[in-house]
Image 1 (tube, rainbow, N blue to C red):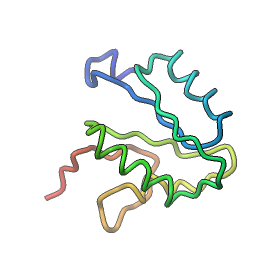
Image 2 (cartoon, rainbow, N blue to C red):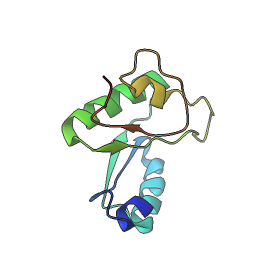
Image 3 (cartoon, rainbow, N blue to C red):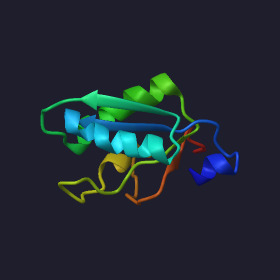
Image 4 (cartoon, helix red, strand yellow):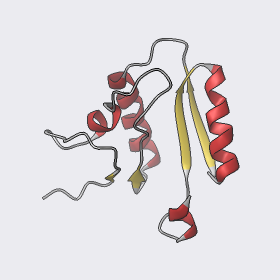
Length: 105
């Protein structure tokens, strides 16, 4: 939200993948200043690879300038989704955002 206040980004889109109950996190994001929310509803188990594939499709559709992913989920602390979404073939999983489009040489 601070990036929007500093006019670094023009829109913030919050995204979550999970059951209907997950919409509470989106409501919180909207209350904190997100402009839009996308909820991919599923009752199936969400594993990092599947979530990364969903996010990849959303990134291709939405064409964001920056993707920021959380490090933790309610049920785990594996920090894999960001690394799986990264275009770097040897990502060093870190809890920081990867710029998009990716400025790799």
